[in-house]
Image (cartoon, rainbow, N blue to C red; front, side):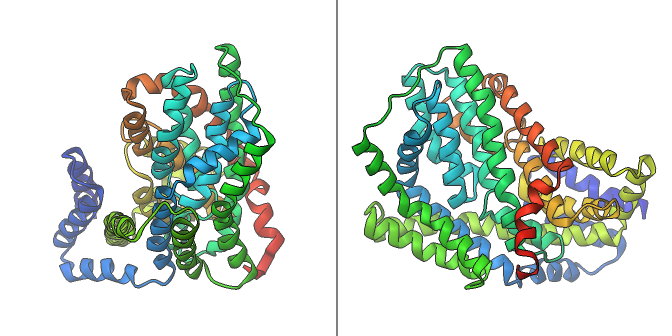
Length: 430
């Protein structure tokens, strides 16, 4: 089996070095491995098709479309105004506003890239105009956008639920709520410290009239989260049904209330979303075939044996997994890593007594950090484009925030109650 393993892993890494897209690399390496072990190529095609015939995965296209509608509807600007009412008067208030706005917007878009593009295009120029350093402004925007990957609803949580063998999406949504907020609170510490140290300006306290208007304008958008999560937890509809309802609600808000999206613009939004959806679904299909060969060649078992031979202590094993995922997050995107590494590391985590829901949150936080880490951090790349800065300059300002995120990761890893408390409240109802 040594040669097929070399073909599978070697061809995949080789294609990545040649800058072949990850989804294509996964598919091609699967076909090459099929030829090397004498398996019919139709098995690869079958594995790619079978995975898409899954009701739970239907939620992903709808959540992507709903997030795109909300991103283009002007909700980002309204959430910035609302966040300014809450925390804008603090020293370095615009940085704290950035973090709070990302927390709220992330709960609707579920995408750190969309968050960075939407919130960043509003706040980065404004922060620079008010006297904040540009690299600091970009660093705050990029790191705070990772909250949306964990705060529900998150389509990455849905991908993990599938990769883990069909976990409760509702439980994963609940498990991500407190850790997502903790990331925001953790990022506020270095943001405020740096703001005081560099004497960044405090914001002006808004008048009651402006505060009421900002709150009123943001409520319709914020209700998206309430409708989705409330409906799922109450049993009115499933997570997949909630994603379709989110699309309808997002359109009603954008078209009838905000009047920021017309039918012509909606068509453009749908087309952009279809491109994203097609890429995500092809990635899931390709990773499914790749994962089948991982299992066929017993690679997860070999890795599990190697890890547990070093130590069977729960805390040591979790530390090793975290370090490996942090390193992998530097060179690969989040979704493929979830699909590839979940079948490898989840069995190891379960052997040492880690709940799969808890492990899912650990993985989401970990790989979210990877999106902010060079050289292949997509969110960092988008933030640099929006902020008109070189990546190497932003990275220097990123370290305090990176340390804060890693600290939250360690806290969630070794204090499982943080993630598991909300799911435990609802028990078997989810």
